[in-house]
Image (tube, rainbow, N blue to C red):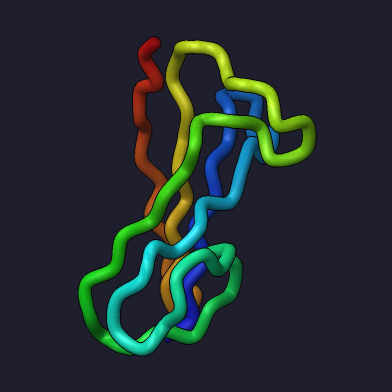
Length: 81
């Protein structure tokens, strides 16, 4: 399955692309952007920083967008410090 996972702020600006933490046949540390993954259980990691600047994001509501084989799921998440 083709899988992408992205995190956005409420202005729909891309904040970060989490990395894969291993599982199945995939190597850990790969950016979860258009990866080909088998059916299995995976863990994604995001360090709470903007990918472009490396600065910590502010506390608040963010959106994550998971796309698997062209099907999209968008959910809210809260970052608390």
